[in-house]
Length: 462
Image (cartoon, rainbow, N blue to C red; front, side):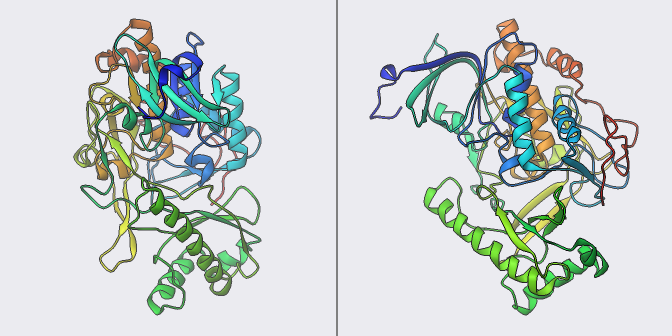
């Protein structure tokens, strides 16, 4: 507890049945799932001024809905689909087929997505607070969990019967005393990335000049000749919903810790520096980019991993690569192990390992239940996994599926007065199936090249 504040003197802001800390894609889905049948009070608290986390702060593509390769299968569904449906209704999404990498992506307008998250959360009756940061946790026997928050109005207390930690950095679990691994302690932590967006790109000219293959060769040449100080030989650049605009995942910041504020500050500055090196490179070297400019940087630098909570079960590399389908699975994943790290020559490289066989594995319930937890779940990039397994199961479709499972688990826990670790997983699976989740590998190949994914999506691009 903060030594300078007596939590008994902090005013009570709210009492709720389910408190979700963090409104990223995992937290938003957790709140929506927990409020799905309107039986309990649900509160969602976010430190930024808008919901969505990574989905709106730095990226514009949902990966993980489909398996990669030339025979994609749709493996995540249910409440996550309602978000994509809403984007489709206003023409703010398209499917981006991809036989390499994480597979077909659901590309969207992140600014519209902020509004979609807002609408869904409010329509669900969730008590929603932005600009509110968790600063402490008090757990007393026979009492609801007390979370201390700070915002512009001061310090406030929220009492909750159940808590879902979707903070990304496992802030609740850290303050509550649950055990975790900090990225970098056992294996090198994945690098951080400042994404940026460029406008006024002549995509037709770019494609005629060789497209992505040409870009790959130009980046490699720039690094090897030293003409441009790019941090890596490869990077992702793709068309956005907005005409003539592209989004990137190219900046790479290594050897700095996102949990140390001085180092995080340094990382933010370095990420911006690299972004404008890329702008110069694109304008000087890439046909179609001569008049392009950066029009936006990610709201903060993208952090891939910090704390990973030790759960009742820990997802491992072996689980992923064996295609394990445990009986207590709560979601499916087909994303390869995609590890962004520093290579032998100091350059940042991406190491890929694809899921063999049917290309899909199941994620056990225990990965979202912290060890010793009675009434707490953990979802998103701080869930229970080793470094390698985390590098596979961190796509946003999977984190949304985790949130969906945790929200329904919290409701089932309240319904049955059962601790998180003692929950009957078969009953949770029934609830998941009722909202449309997928727990078995589909037999049919998903249509990602034209209309027909779900609700007759018709807007697709290459």
